[in-house]
Length: 368
Image (tube, rainbow, N blue to C red; front, top):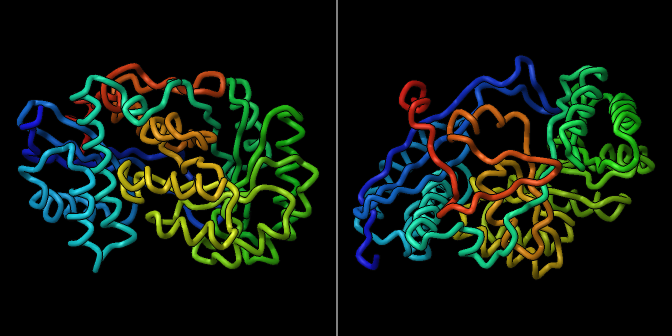
């Protein structure tokens, strides 16, 4: 397959509406789903990668079709390092973070899917992993939920077999910490002491408020406290980490090995949640994982268990995947029979590449 070449790319939106009225501490959730890149080759082998359907969707599609595709036509899909650097040199003035990197991430993941298919092996084995079974936790617990709905959802996660769950905190835009404390207590009481529980503040607080909250909930045995302050406030994150009695998790809004190095050099994280669908795809994520390993920290990527399962399976510091309930429907729309969490784990299919098959019928009728 040394003569295999990239011949083109299709880009489409796979979206659907989540439950009405969902909110975290900082925003309401709108139409949700994926921007999918389907990369084709002259060997008849295609690969799929994706990023998020959020603000700037048309710009991401334009980056893929108007910038990345012309740069890589005729190149080998095995040249992921060369392709990454080639694209980076073009976009670095307009997108070392953000939309351009989302576009690059989707294309790069698709190239790794092609690599696995050419070699006839799952990507996690190509990366040196051995076990296809990866821990996964349930994520939801929106701040817009009533306490009753919050507890019912958490109990449902446990009934579904999850051994760990995560809920949102920062109700009323972070202005009612006492209510957040009551909500965490209610969930802990409902799920019992043996289910692991984490919280996510989605950047809402200042350091003093975050520390106040963390000290108030320390007896509820939280696995980690995620994004207590805005992600760009690395000194603030480091201060929180020094002052609280639980691991601090962050990184989903950071980009590239350099951003993660800065985060960890500052002592601002115990668990790094960098997202491969934003931060450069598998090519960059492999370097990021090495940086995390060099700082003796855990890798637990943000969301997108179907895209991240191969990376966590192959990483010796891979801690867990996140199954955010918001994306359960988009997963089923985009892919045929995607793997699902069972009793707190997800099993990667022993199929070539990512092991995912696009749901062509749904895409043909509904994709944009």
